[in-house]
Image 1 (cartoon, one colour):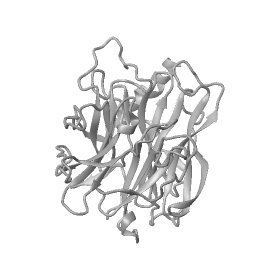
Image 2 (cartoon, one colour):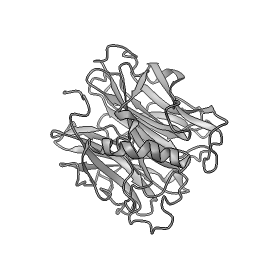
Image 3 (tube, rainbow, N blue to C red):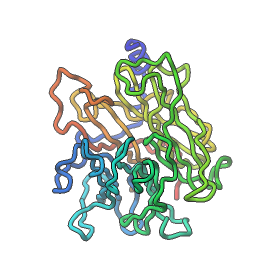
Image 4 (cartoon, rainbow, N blue to C red):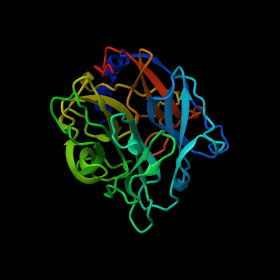
Length: 365
C-alpha cells in the first residue's frame, strides 16, 4: 500500500506547487502571551478582511492538551498578511471567546469556522461562529452557533446545541446568491465529518477501526433551528488510495458556485494534506487539479512536514489570494513523521501560501 501511495502522490505534487507563488518558511505566530504560553498549539479558523479598518483579522484557537475546557479563541490583526499584532481588547488580552467550562465525553471546546455576512438582517448575527462545546451540563456536547455585532463580543444564539450527533469535525458556509442551483434559500450550509463502515480499511494506526470518514451536509430552513440532515454528499472513490479518507471540508464561494478544501487523511501513515474541489450547487462536488494536493506537506525538517490542515477559506487581500493553514511535524496519531529526526522548533504552527490568482474564479466583490 505504501508503494501505491508513492505512485499516486509523487507525480502530482509538482503540479500543485506550480499554483503556489509563496510559502512561509516558519509559523507566522508564536504563543508568547501569558494566557497562551501554557498552550500545546494553535490553529487558524478564519481570516477575514476587517469591515472597520484596512487590515485582516485572523481568528485562532489556543489549545491546552488534556485540558480542553481551557481552550480559547483569540484574534490578531495584520496590514500585510504576514506580520500579526495581538491587540488588547480591553481586558489586557486578545481573547474573544472561552469555553463554558463543562467537561465533555466527546471532543473539546473548539471553534470550527467563522463568517461575516453584511446582508444578515439581524445585526447580532452578522458575524457567525460555529463551535463545538457544552453550554448546558444537562445536555450532550454538540455544534453551537454564536453571533456577534462586531466579531469580538460573542453570544451563543442558543444555549443548547443545534446538532448533537457525535462528531466534532465540521465547518459551514453561506449560500452563494450567484449559484444557478442549490440550497440558495438556506441560510447555512454545514458540512460535517460522518462515518461509514468499511471492513477493508487498514486499522494499524487508526483510532476508528473500520470506519471510513466521509462528508455529509446539514441545511437549515430557518436559522438557528429546523436543521435537516445529515445527508452524505462526498465519499472517496475507487480512484483514491485504499487508505484515503475525507476528514474535514471547508466551503467557500466561486464566481458561479462553490469551491471546497478537502482535508485528506491518509490512514496508513497518518499524514494529512488538502485537495481542491468545486461544485455548482454545494451538493455535488468534483475533484480538481487531478487530485493533487493544493497544499502539499512541507519538506522534511519543516514544521509542516507531517500534517497540513485547513479550516479557513482563502482570502483576497490587496490583489493576492492568501490561504492560511495549520501545520505540524507530527501526524494524526501524534507520532513524529520522521521519528529518526529531531523535531523542528517550533514543531507546529500557522503557515500561509499565496496562490496563483488565476487558479480560482473568486467573486470580484
